[in-house]
Image (cartoon, rainbow, N blue to C red):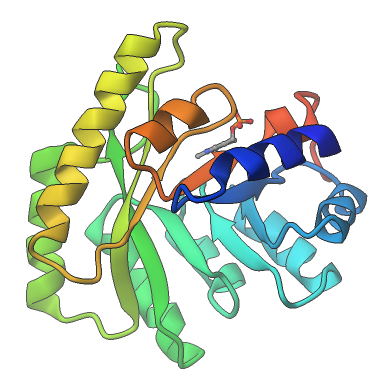
Length: 221
Ligand SMILES: *Cc1c(COP(=O)(O)O)cnc(C)c1O
């Protein structure tokens, strides 16, 4: 783990109303302990079972953030403890999160993932789909989930202006929903390569992995 980078990012975020999520996906437990020991408490994972395994082995004052695409049959693994699910992109997944949350007598906070990048491979909804989803959520009155905001990933490009335009688009949509819903407070945008642009454009959560832990992720069997 790059402790200097952690400190640099922490310093950068002071007074910016934005918090750091350390994206620990694919990294071994020892790395997460190192991160914990220098005070990091928000960890991001993208696979439900891997997150559940790590949750069991680590101290219980960690906030676990699900940032990867969710499958319905995996929600049960994280429902007892997950802090925020960033990647809701359909009514059906939200319905399943609601059902699992009810079993554990919890309200699970969620973000809607918006597709802002050029690439077609990234998950997420467009503006119209997100509006339709929010309308449906309101009419169905799901009691054990709470939509708190939006998440998005910018294009994987060195063109900083393009990244900024994509984040601006997400911010605009966030402000639109926020004006109609007082629970909207979280805008999750910015990763290793573009977190400063994310913060400049109004991000409240940056999700940073490779900058802190290096690129060479290895899979856990
Ligand atoms: C892996 C991942 C990140 C972190 O990416 P880095 O470029 O390593 O900082 C952030 N958000 C999501 C959704 C991810 O899957």
